Image (cartoon, rainbow, N blue to C red; front, side):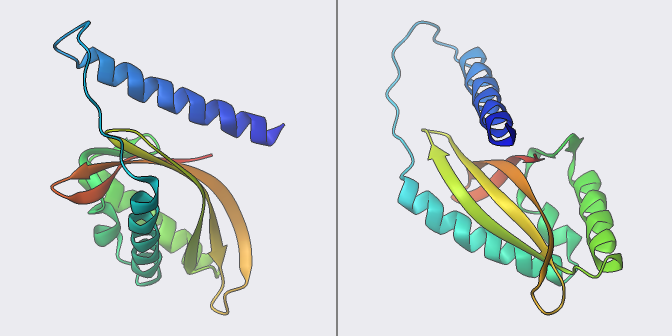
Length: 157
């Protein structure tokens, strides 16, 4: 039942993204040529990014974490660089208070189109010895900006 809920959330996220793109299409009704993002390239970039993300979390660097988001990117319902910094700072402090200073990511699936990369995965909070204490699912929508992969939307599921 829980996996069905996740599938629905992924489908709805994709519908919102596609609907937003079609609303921005100035040439309504025209056929557009698309070039899909290579899934293998996307996976390599995401693996490097989540490794860096984990390291920045462990180093309690909320500014570096927030720098991975687009200027109009969102962390849950939080929007704006300063608010994302503040949210990450609170999450880092909460994890530290619970004895889980390590945040690890496991990518379960990646989907791409001509503009976005969608990652579905599991986040794990671990103690100093690497023992996983809790975990949760997440959905991240990435977008390229200036040749760099940035987070456009980031949701915990």
